[in-house]
Image (cartoon, rainbow, N blue to C red; front, side, top):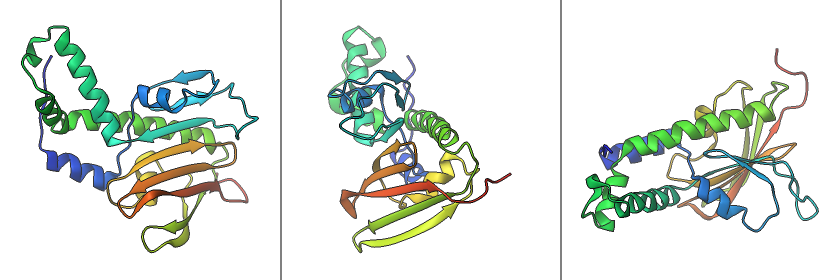
Length: 207
């Protein structure tokens, strides 16, 4: 196995600039362990086709980004490889593992690429009518501001997130419902979380 390294500053800069998203399969399993859902899991999303909707509204897809979870499960995977006798990891301490994980920009880039692909799938599924997106937010940041904006129907996942989320390190969950997408976002100015509501503009579809 080849262990790839890069500067931590590059990772942080890329994540803050592009508002990267990623998650792990295990994270989603933990999030839904208490439900009776039939799950179809890929890297960063799940379909809840058979969810019991008596307790809550049906969720069609969920995407999560949490840096600490990525590092946690990458560390567990490396330790399993080490226990299985992987020579490249022989003698590593947990601290050395974590240092290499944080310095592995390829890991975060790979997670980001997959996540953006999955978010594009969500947007395509949600906006079949090709209408502009309407974004609303209340109590944003430490000033508790409110506002709204409109985004073009053909915006891709990368610029969709960049246009909505604050340019800082974020942890968030994106949930698709039948009539809206919600983004629950946590960052240093909103440690208890803030919610963005994305709907489709009324009127004619864009041709």
